[in-house]
Image (cartoon, rainbow over all chains, first blue to last red; front, side):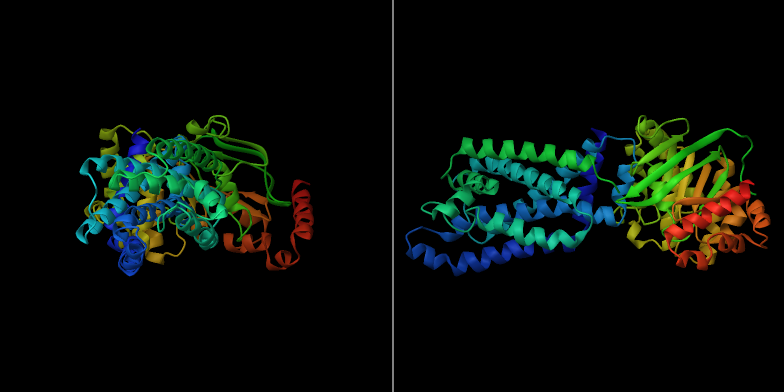
Amino acid sequence: MKVIYILWLRQLKRYFRSKSRIIGALGQPLLFLFALGFGLGPVFERAGEGDYLQFLVPGIIAMSILFTSMFNGIEIIWDRQFGFLKETLVAPVSRVNIMLGRTVGGASVAIFQGVIILFIAFLIGFRPADLSGLPVALLFMFLIAILFTALGTAIASLLEDMHGFQLIMNFLVMPLFFLSGALFPIQELPAVVDTLVKINPLSYGVDGLRGSLLGVYHIGLSTDLAVLSVCGLILVIIGAYLFTRIEA
Amino acid sequence: MTGTSENNETIIEVTDLTRYYGRLAAVDNISFTVRRGEVFAFLGPNGAGKTTTIKMLTTLIKPSAGTIRLNGYDPIRNQDAARRSFGIVFQDPSLDEELTAYENMVLHGVLYHMPPQIRDERIKMLLQMMQLWERKNEQVKKYSGGMKRRLEIARGLMHLPHILFLDEPTLGLDPQTRNLLWGHIRELNKKEKVTIFLTTHIMEEAERVADTVAVIDHGIIIDQGSPRELVERTGSTSLEEAFLALTGKTIREEGPESFRQMAGQYLRRRRL
């Protein structure tokens, strides 16, 4: 447990000491929040779908957590190229514990990033339907963060250098985000898109966040929790397995 | 010969060690032993197989064939015991530069399961020895190259290892810092009786500090002995000359296959 704790603490210290990283990671979600929230708001309202900002905020929180988690997982490649990973790999500790410490640390950072977005959204007019939904929203943030940090770790364990990073961003992270219902309602979609949304675990995270913050689930609380928990567990196991096979 | 080697007890035993990358043998059937307490220099040109050998010795990669004994432990079967036996200073920086020197040391202590009191005492002793105690609470990214190297050595020694691997520890450092660093390494070798296994491209350093030198090229150990023995055998006046005689430019340009043949011939001549 001490090993997991110290590696978790390391991730938090690195995050809180890097102001540029905090601000940089907020840039894209805030741009989406302001540009789309205020830009498409009137169109959304005219279509009879209600307040777009209210609809959008859970999706942007999920986006922020997705991006930060994946980046934190993929950070292993950086650590591998520039050294620190080797320090942990030659230590007499289980690699599963190292992976868990890094994953929980990366996920904690991502959750914090999501909470900042929620706070900023609150300042610009977002109002949760019921404050009692906040703990459930935090649970969903945790599940999304663990799932995608583990996914990032699994991918990073297979890559030798940062060259594949852009590929992952363009062909995995962006599709995961755009096909999750973060920006648009997931009802009455064309069959192909509907299938892609349904096989995307982030869709269940977005639905869970939207349900817990706005009180309206489209998929269902129990399904959202079950899918995220099972996918998260599977990815942690896969990530741990691949991490144990890393050769520095 | 400046090390503290006093006995013939073997602390590292490598037998027929081989590592393939695809079809290329980066390390090709090498064998050697290192005595407890000695300074062992593992020399070779770039790409000779030094770092691959260190990676196998330190459990970072698995050998394709052959065996290793580190302080009596097999790094494959008794991985944790083998890992506790050594410290390492990697060729590339391996500190977390966002953390302070003290935090880097604590992290290492936790990874090696050190009791907090012993850990804290050890951190203080090592950082004082490396003249970093006054700046222990600064983030490592504010340190100079020499300070980072000293910190890495201190960290490598945190858990009282029997062996310290130094993979080009003075790479990129100015002569003053190199001199200071070797002073510390010699002191540690004497004071803590730690066996030093080092690689370096600076032959003068190896000649000055090493008890035993092994020269590797194209994955094969082509000569081994004390610096003086190597110099005498090659009819040279310094280790650098001996090194060039063993790994000369002409041979390198002829490619690995013919190199292996020539190395084989050389070794056979020596045995005769």
